[in-house]
Length: 338
Image (cartoon, rainbow, N blue to C red; front, side, top):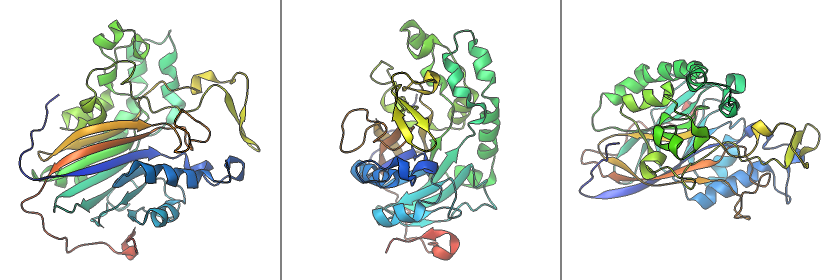
């Protein structure tokens, strides 16, 4: 994995991606310690000190979250799946006419040092809940990979899109692609991990992650943690333990043994932050799996079935960066912080 070498003045950018399980985040049965899941989501974001958040399953919470953070934000519509929040000004949104707003959105953030970063928020379909089959010992490795073809096809639509293409053509442009891929990475399932009996001792040439690598993108978490051990697996799904089950009227209730254990306990890294560019380098990466008031794995107080991923980037300041004259106003789908 090639390592970017940066010289000259630099600044740091801290980016989070998080699927917040938004359909439940205002449900009254999901209130804990007098806080809705949405409020607990906001608390976690504030503690993370993220500068930019690529959010998945936002569903009606974008404005409230942006106001609580005092951030700029972009979402295609009030009830949209995807939303991007930023401490820094945003411009050039990828509108539904340019991108599939349910699966991909894009926006450009301008950092204090003048660098412009194109941010894409992405969600690949969870069709078939394919990821749970990774535990099926009777399923061959290549059979598992073939079941991921639908996500690879969806990703190829994005990688071949003209909106991304015009930024890829700009050698000075910095690009980050982050979100919920509902797919694992070939980097995590190798002969080496198999020899250590990690990740179900599988070797998986996953097409989606290979396509990202072939397009010049760096998996930031694995770049920072190249040696895979039990401490650096980086699992992001699921945070739900075996001691809970979901009831429609009651929310998550404790049980002695969950009736669907294949959906429980962390076992897959499916949320990613990728970067591309000569002036950007991941220098730290972590997953967040606990609520701010409890430093242990603490679902359901932790408000999502996905861990958040946070990467700190070192960005070499742009020599050509100037203040954008094309900032987008609320009428164009981006709300500026007051």
